[in-house]
Image (cartoon, rainbow, N blue to C red):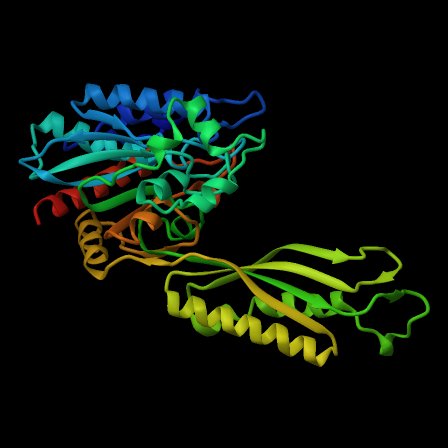
Length: 423
């Protein structure tokens, strides 16, 4: 991996203490943990592979002069004391992966944050405020099917009801998993927030917008808030041969029309809104039976809560209208709703200025995927920077971001954090 990274690397990007070779070596070292013979890597949350990756980064943190602590959720904090040690600015991401995942998702954000501290060490710079490099546990949710788990735990968003419901694929509950990991449920319930005043996260885009615009780095203008609607169209089952076409209450016909019209609704409310149906359940699901019921989940997202919620209303209205026209029933219920996290204008403008100074066209784009920043951003100001993803591929062994783009992302992150340090 290292050779592929440095093959076309522009060494002119090695300045201000940032070292592309060091970053490439570290990306390669982590890529070997959990590597699969079929390609890709697997480091589920709270696994030994995730723990080994954290321990590797902890070693690098200590070499860079950081003091390291780990909380009861396995979240890692490497601290560089500043002139004012009463508050800190944090940056980082995660090192766990989806099954057969790639080598940049999460890892780049952790190593970019660490590279900032390494660069300061080289230049002898002492930040005015303290700085923390963070590794959150189980961001992907592979262990409990409950994403961004480490950052939710850190923020106190995991309550007793959720704890009681958590089971992994082996049937282990949270208490058992924590004990295997070297922690305890008692300690977990007493996790304390740290003295952060701001959190910044670098991440690969996991999309194609930057690549289409030939840009190495982009500014995230908000993290979309996800909401799920369960929609069920309810008609009447009947014999596929003996029921005339003009005398049917076919739930699947109604559902099909709804799904086909869904793609035109988001643009009514926002240019950043999206809606997706990826799961359908047809009943009775027989080849010669008119479908009586079709259940589906509609995934709806936007970076602004008001437009996201307006989209929920429009989707509900369209489902009800189609059901009425088809003379069948429909029920629509919300199953989950997460608040979007827009990035404040001041931080976007600071990033615009940094990119302009680097002669990079400043482009804003939404994050449709969830990230640890979305939990931190519910209580603290946050910002995100995206690095270009080759072909937009992520959660896949083919996931790739060039070393040039990785290092440019570190430069942007470093300059941005230094601005926050001086406020």
